[in-house]
Image (cartoon, rainbow, N blue to C red):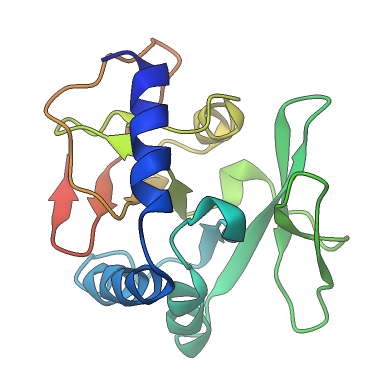
Amino acid sequence: MTKSEYRTKYKALRKQLSTNDLEEFSLKIANKALALDIWEASYYHMFLPILNKNEVNTEYLLHILQGKDKSVIVPKSNFETGELTHILLQENTSLSISPFGIPEPASGIEISAEQIDVVFVPLLAFDASGARIGYGKGFYDRFLAACNQNTIFVGLSFFEAEEKILHDITDIRLHFCITPKNLYSF
């Protein structure tokens, strides 16, 4: 399959999930995340889910991080440059929905990619070696490439790994991926 075919397949599979499935699977993913050895870090980057794309609801992970008094950073997309900026999520951070349907901070304290310890990565599909397929704009590949060499990348997926996905040299592999049923380590 091509990347485009995988995108089509997994977008269709997500659309078939009920609201109850989305919440149940998202909670299972958050609970499985507790088994990872990542909780001593300080800065955690987390995407906020695009509701109309049936993404993993990261609210459960957010509650875990807040309960552990961790610093949470959320992305803000610039579709003109194809870059993400990373904003510290605070009590007074105002979020709004971008024209692309993405919940984002209006403004705030910017954190550099090099400072981030753990990134929870959105994706459509992944394989048994940690290769991932996103929406195809390259935002996360550019961001992950800018992180420091010790940053841990954790994919979140409702679906299990494909055997092998063709990937480009610019694609950044995951260290872990969490599904409702499994915790993958690469």
